[in-house]
Image 1 (tube, rainbow, N blue to C red):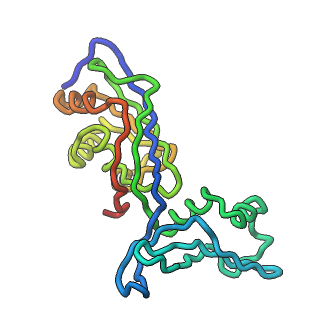
Image 2 (cartoon, rainbow, N blue to C red):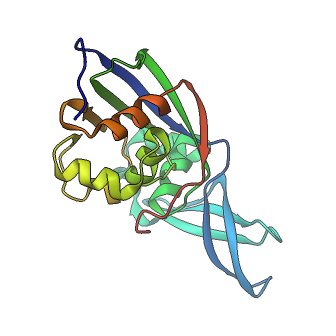
Length: 217
């Protein structure tokens, strides 16, 4: 097992962002085939005296056919927070991204590692805090595999042995999308030497890119 001459903790923030509009896959009547529809970031709003209907507009990436994804249906105006209503009316990007994510839309992601305490050959513990932008989706095991250079099976074994701990605690956390504010701790004290060396070697600052994976995949 791995040993260290001193207690050294590497701390980093894992930021997951995207420069691409989130997409969903739907049947396109104009193309007569399954196509990807990209969020336009804009809403269609129909407000009556006391109720509101709103849709997030998606466009076919092949022909620009418009698909309206429901956001509010016959919802009483007074039940919507005034700040949220103003954001809806001005096509607020963050609000559009949140509703796109709620619709199951995903986008290609970029993974950036920002170290507050860098890793080195003596590192005994790794502590990660995950920051996920709205509409970004990548499974936690895929993310950690990308960062640490380990297979999903190796990660699962380390979790089973309590070498890797995840908060909030969940028995299925590895198979679910990474969530904003999630923390991951990897303790090398009981980790096989070869895995510890690979993890330390993989933790170099830089920008990583990976397509978002299906949360259920």
